Picture 1 (cartoon, rainbow, N blue to C red):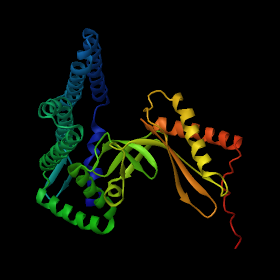
Picture 2: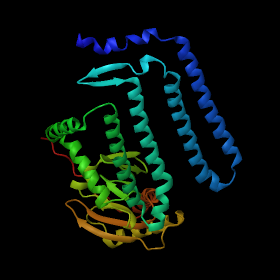
Picture 3: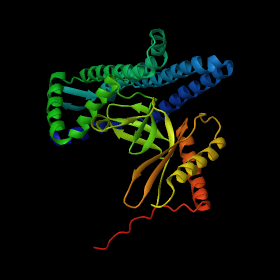
Picture 4: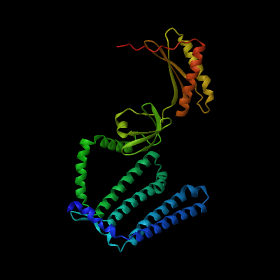
Length: 352
């Protein structure tokens, strides 16, 4: 029966020799042991900084490749006379899929992935440096090169196992309709990722503010953007967010430690202004590297039960901003208590 085709196709596994597989894994272990020995030997031979940073990583990648593909080729050679290697364990519509074809497809896709990654890592930086390509554009080009090469590798792999790419196109067309109705957000994030990579409204390395969290962009993929924050860990933000929402780019803007305080009506506003200035000036010397700029104190708003003031001090990074804001608050509390400045009372909630 057709329902048992796959099970019948793997019946031959019962006839395989356990000793053959045992010896195969012994030889396989020797290949990787030789690889580890060569990596250790090469690392001992090189001592210069240039060798350790540029040459050794290339040689290590090369030896990893040689070990992996030597193991695959040894597998094919070792079992080349065995019928099961070419036995079609699955067959439909004239397509016969054997272990040999699966291994060939895996080699093509894996080799393409390693090759394009090595090309982008070791070769493309020389071209980017030669033509003055910035970090963000180089990242975009690397992603485009990787996706194009992998699509070609997958097409070759599908062709190798006899799959009709025309039929595959029809499948993707149907899948596209499904995306339009069922997974619109994924499609929207994908398109937004392409827009971000090419229009570059934001770049890798820039500082942005997302929902009051400030962090640095470390990676932009086709689905999401990775942002590393100082306190809240890693944020994985869907790309659609950057297209539809207002996102503050903090890279080119000056960074300030900002403290807002509300005092009660009846306080001397000039005195409050002076005390806030004094609190900021008192804490600034404790932070080496802080810009030599006077703090900015402003009377910013009238509210029903408070007079709002803000004090701002120029800082150089997020960590300094958060630490200085905390210290300024301590100084304000001390000075307000000393001079009998009353803070605004929180409005009481009415019972319903």
